[in-house]
Image 1: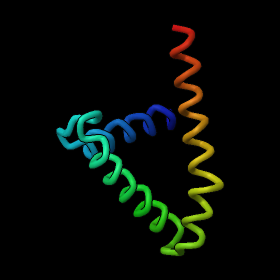
Image 2: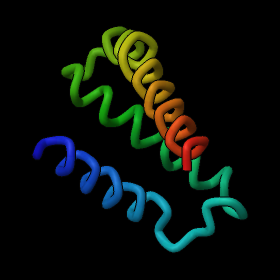
Image 3: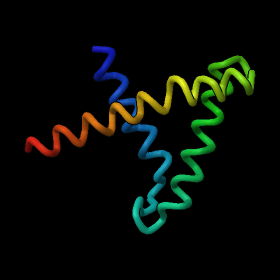
Image 4: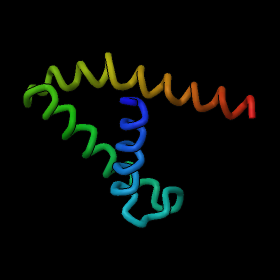
Length: 79
């Protein structure tokens, strides 16, 4: 149940980040918005501690994002 809620939240956030922009043609602007969001959420989640936010990014967020991309790629290869 929580996984499906997380997926729904991620889709909703992606729609807001894209904001009608073309994700390929407007890639750089979309990624700047994503950078802002990631930094903001990490800082809030880590109680406005920049060192803790950077550590969480490097030790928690990036490895998990890489895992999700690899999972997507593996499912895509099967299909």
